[in-house]
Length: 508
Image (cartoon, rainbow, N blue to C red; front, side, top):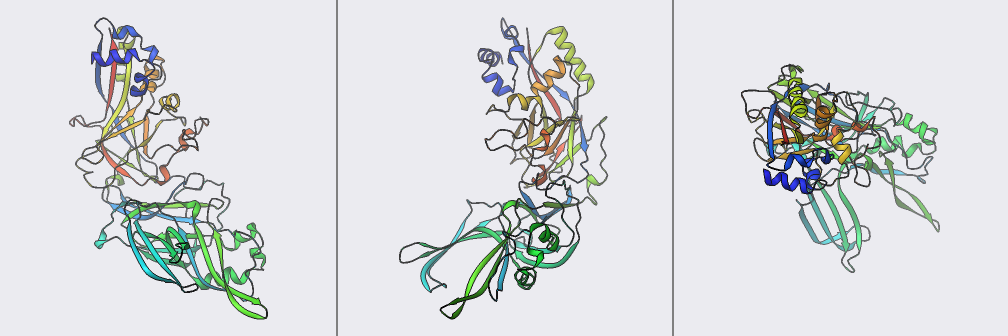
């Protein structure tokens, strides 16, 4: 321990800052580490409590960098089911589909996240490309979609995905929308059975190995051709397709959902969703009429209102009756993404008073402070991927923790350090050194710490988004589309894994 503090002193703005998350190291004073200095680590009980987020969170386009779809049930948190709603826009208005245009097919295309390192390749060397009967080679790469939940129900989890027309007007794409928003639905206009895998296709010509056809790994959902023939192709010259304002009131949107109430949740890119219309039209050349193929793409991307609908059913779960108790705390606390509950950690005022007294009378120097919580072995012993990160907020403040603001550009800084996530129990250390120093040394208020599953987002440079938006910094996060959850040991004096503050300080 002495050797550690000796090294820390000699590199005040180096190792001490990076390792201990200590941006104000010169306040410690070298006197704490000279002439027989000692380092002391003390542990203090925390009050851990349930935070009810009302199973609701903003999921509109401004917050939804990734969208979710699916359903997952387990007995601690119950059912969480996610559907997706989006407007639709034309790529150009008053479109001309040509003479006698008839739709062959319509396909909704989404791009899920998938495991690129788990590929199954099928090669057909003697493939004949149908357009011109060209000898070719066809390579199909199949990948599993990244899933959170149960992937092997009845051998392999299958979803029945359905697409319905939305009959409510979906307002402006800058309006705030929460995950419990309900919209009216019309008829089903698409759907398919989905086994959890997606495929890419590459077809190359035998003669010169040039590409004849390329298709990315996507989830393709067949749509109702008759619906789009009548709704789009036949309405080409109508006022409804003349401009954006008219069109989004004429075709108001779609909703993707699954029938099932158990399985998994998966993520996809909401800004690349499209509906491709494949049609044929007359082409007249030298008096001869032939049929020519055409493609028209409906845009469901970033210019559209879109959001996730998230249903939670807590029936017969511990969360159904769990109350927030910031005085005694709870023996277990629950954390779930996508609008589910979070948890709070409170440092007792008596603990703050004791440490302030040491600071004032014994001249201690705070080296590091961290909050530690363990996963609960009794209730969360499963193979579901544990969250690796949390957002951390001081109650009543929308700004980042002072540790984050001070060390945002320090590459080795981590707000959350997670350990043994593939084991039981795992545990998390939450670094609050500068925040805690300010509570002790500058008499700042002892605010509760509120944790939620998710992490903070970054901008194009890799820096924390929201650093310049101090009034709304906490809004720049992934909470709305992070599906993980975990049960943690809360305040339980009989359990050595009870939530705790771990404080390291030096003194003469």
